[in-house]
Length: 95
Image (cartoon, rainbow, N blue to C red; front, side, top):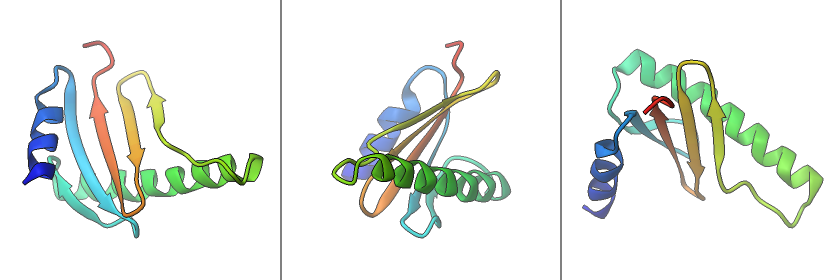
């Protein structure tokens, strides 16, 4: 219930296009997008996040990735990694 409330709150923010929650294996658990788009985002962002995390750890083994933000011409993608899950938020950067 707490997770649902948090996701609702995030989704209500101005400019937020979508939210996706994926598990440690990269499988989508919750999404506000259609299936094929969700699967595409989940797969690619899971790979990118794991690569970013290993890069951070290669530089300093005592360190860890806490947040990943990607800004493109069209969107801003934010990834908040946790032990078990990844929260992905896609928003319109112009908002």
